[in-house]
Length: 416
Image 1 (cartoon, helix red, strand yellow):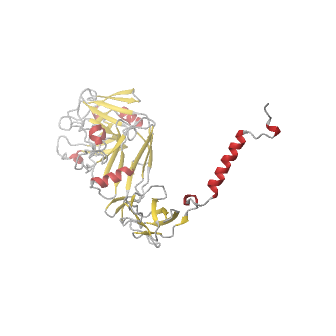
Image 2: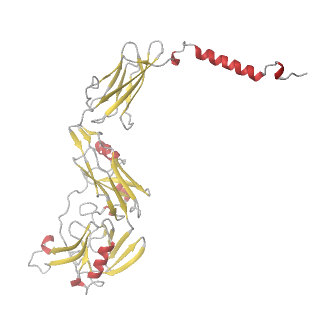
Image 3: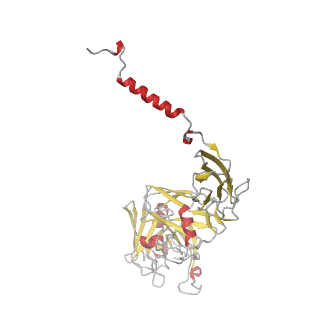
């Protein structure tokens, strides 16, 4: 006959728990395992390489952690305030750890060291050191300024000092961050030793937010050259506005988010002054500008000479190509090309165009006898470079081409 636990019989599960408890107490009660003890203060561990005794370390030299008195180093971490870790190598015998990654200038580091003594007891020590500030500082100025732009607006980065070495360029480029919402694929292109442009594979999305920043400060770029603080920018884009001029048909079609807003009769550059083909980006707008032929090399006595007050002028090249009011050529607009390179239209149409575009909007010309707009030396012709070629201009792209691109800015030469 079975008995109830109430009558003195101890259940099996109670005996099992008692046995487990006994084992746990026995395992935890002893001190023969050194791993169970609290880590001791590893006072025999110190810093070398100019980082000890309150001295500021030279960021160009490696920092060392050494152990004496029989202790053996088992692990070292060196991090800055943002959590970036410095790489290093530990000697096989545990006597020394030496940094192999570059230190930043003007930065405080925290060193955490784990050790082991001859009996296997674990030691810990935390130390701090600071690196000295750089004598030469590389600064970056992003462009354009904070604001709203058209979907064709590239991002620019102007460096305070030239950077030629490919490895140094890669260091700089890795710190330049561009993030957009919605996200798009993009890349930097080294225009020359001091100038970079950034663009997506296609135009920016309409109504996007673009944040541009850098993590360059304190980073070693080259011998004696370290990154300085960089001010970021935030851009937004408006509607996708594109003005497409067919120079052979003498008409401009203005699109907004893919929908046609207006078809405008125009005149473009005549033979010898043909308007540039390709994609340009609006650089600025002037309600009034005086245009003179002498600014583009036309002598005052020439039959091509001109000196005119011009209204509602939207600039698309630094050398003086505009979209503007040209009431003197209304008889040719929609029928013939008679200008010195600009796109002319009636005053009413020029005012409408002026009011409906912004800096960064796209102005594209097709069907002209002129050459294609160059990418960098006369405004923003960035979109005329194929994406594959653009990607090769990045210092982070394998197989990039050698050399630098054009850097000189063209003179401001208004045309009509």
